[in-house]
Image (cartoon, rainbow, N blue to C red; front, side):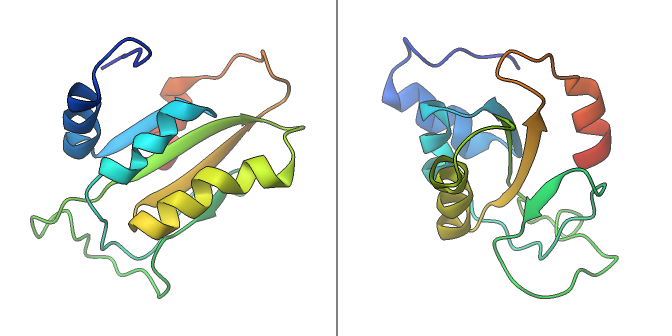
Length: 125
């Protein structure tokens, strides 16, 4: 699903984010909707070295995924320009941690650099 949330109601945004398992979004205000996502109980992510991750719950990962057991595993993948200040970088990482939603940060080489969503999905989902 490809959505622009700028002109949608908060009710609609709630339903989109609450039902989402994975949200891939450019750094910005739409990521505040992370608050509506269902908490994750999966403990860690296995992703390539060039992608920074932050799991919301400490511990070690097991081979058995909670998703297989019927639990909803929510994940935010934030796309952010490489030169973004740390204060801005930590904003949605901290929100994801607070909401117990998995978080992955993908760095762009510049603000307008293209991002291969297909590759991101293959490497992180």
